[in-house]
View (cartoon, helix red, strand yellow):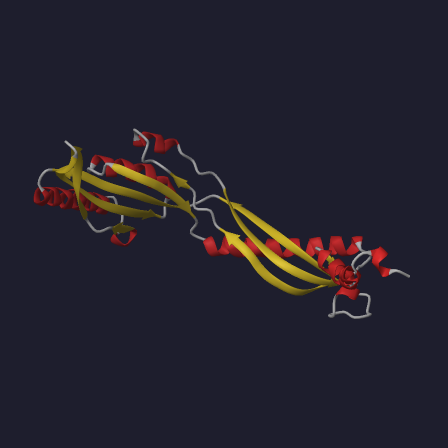
Length: 243
């Protein structure tokens, strides 16, 4: 027999290996050295878990931006404004540990005139980050920041006080989903007994939605913003041995 009529003989030698690699979900015992000749086969799945919850924490990110001709006077004005803001927050019961006041930055401003760059004063910038455990208070605090001289809000972030508990719950749901899929797929392949062999964390995500406010003309629009429920997700990669 002329083997050349069948094409390259090397393809036939690699065919069993190619069949094993092409099995994405089901690996028959002939393709697996873990279960030789015992009728077992492997099922690989990805379990997903989702937990919806309402955020109960909020972080306000604000910036004080001032411009002026004299750097010394500008620095004094910036420090006085921030001191006034911090005192007002303290009067509202916001503790010092809830406030992160960034370092004051001073940058020289330039303008292009007559083909060259010329100085045109300075800009002072200082950031404020306020964490609130009572989500209902963030419109009130935004009002306070504006009235006390803060002129830029870069965003509002919402989160959870029980973040770890929500992540754990989502992970548990993902594990149960992996078991459900394995049993379903194992049954479809004629098996009734599926046992977990390998499981690993595929990923977890806790959304931190951010309300951008730099382009808003009025902070009044923040009062109508409702983050609603957020989805905390987790996934697991698992392999089950079925028979």
